[in-house]
Length: 382
Image (cartoon, rainbow, N blue to C red):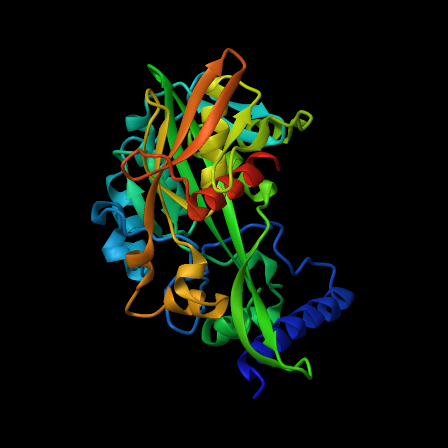
């Protein structure tokens, strides 16, 4: 049987676009939003209907990192926003020395403030932009939003506005995004802030006649421009003018230079050679982990170790089963998540090596360790 719900949502979305086209011919007033990024109306609620895509990792590592036992609701979000608006007394009016740093095609924010002072500001920022936090860890400087839909991609004509309140759920982009933020102290009084985006898209599972039987959520490529949008917005939140923030983020990026080389030492043994010193390699590995299926639980920069968890989709069955399981009330994925250590070792002023170890710090010379290192190398060479 065909997936009528899927086709119905797509039909409604196309209908809305046609309405906008017709309305634009009869009116001089723009009927679409000028802002191309808006998650405030997405209403991020987990449910078995797969309205929001699952993560490829589990965030069950430590209960103190999870909001409401890992389940986020709009009431939680509204209460948090209300509380922050009532109690917020630390809104910054400007931070001297705030700037965008670049390395090839990567951007991040450098702020001359301690991470402990910045963390509440960044947390408020994500809530004000319509997101629910499923990881909120001041002790590690890591936060992660729930999946949300960019509602600005849905045309906002007068008919859509009139019925949106009652039937808003039938208008769907078929895409979801989530964002990780990591605050990294680099020296006393200075913090680097990294924002990474992950996306998912709803796709049909078709039969031999190409009819859509069901839908699954699958990963889609990372979007650096979405990351840039939120870097600029965060700079505004921290006190910079909109014009300054957009100009700083929009400055041309440098050329992409290969810095990582995958080296196979044996059947299941390998490492990654970096053509950069420890500081740069540490930063690149952190960004690669943020953009991949790893969940960073903690890190020790002085020892060069990222403590991570990873759920292998193969451990949960086929792709459809994997995604479905993460939405069920009984989440077995947390039981299958494994801990690893990703180690960055300096080998010279302009070189470093990356290794994957097990939870006890021993070499992970297994097919799983080889696979994890391969995925990490893929991220580092993009």
